[in-house]
Length: 210
Image (cartoon, rainbow, N blue to C red; front, side, top):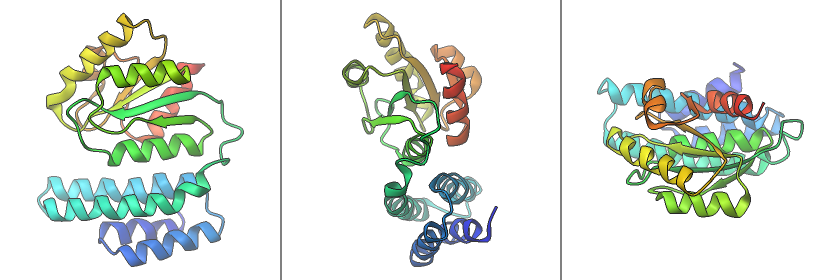
């Protein structure tokens, strides 16, 4: 990992927004690919923050602050994402957080990573009912539907959504991810693939399209 990416990650972990913004801009000016900034800087930082939260070194205020900083950094990177993945295999992806789940940090990182790799991504937001996934997938002729879930309590909602997709006659493959899921849980709800993080999501989607 380059020194600039380490600086971005460390500034995000320490909740130093001004420093993080500065280092992101420096990395972009230096020609560091947006995908690397997203995956190694932002996603890497959020993973450390998640670990600190789990070990009670960070609490809810730090988690909320980190989410706001991450969103601001993502907005800086986003204009540089388009066009980086021109050589990637094109596909249409509809992505959203599961019904009754309002968390979007992981979803946003996955969406940015996919865009950086040439995918056409439609983000339908958080707390998304199956009907909204279906409507958007039909509208844009989606190849992939990606569902994110942080809360284990919404896994059943994802299973219902996948059942609704089949009833609606959708042919799009379904990939799931987020803290609520393991490979076993993904298999249990009938998903076509599971991804632990943004990089794994990209790999899994390419495999589904092969």
